[in-house]
Length: 138
Image (cartoon, rainbow, N blue to C red; front, side):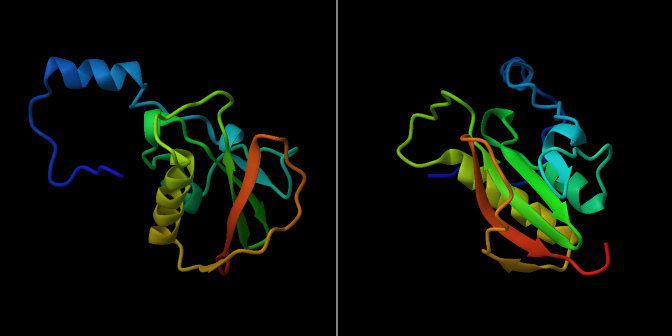
């Protein structure tokens, strides 16, 4: 089950909305250096290009931002970084849905080719390969 808002934001925010956004840090995002990497997970990017900035601002459950992306040439390898001990209260992996949303945001600004071909980059026990998108010319 997934819920997504439709329409336009209200001109006035109610106290409960403000408290909820504050509680999940809804207006904050992790820095690029914690989300995006060049060639492997030992080389964090200092700043994000347009494709990756679109991902950085994608919504995620509890604002966890579980995506990690490794750029190799024109290939962008998408990984889910499972939060240790995170329980969503449902029987499926909510963080993989977050990855789907992040990939959608990426493809909205990159005319790329979607493939599933694990590049074999070394990961820790909480990180799982999801997919690769090849974008020409960046």
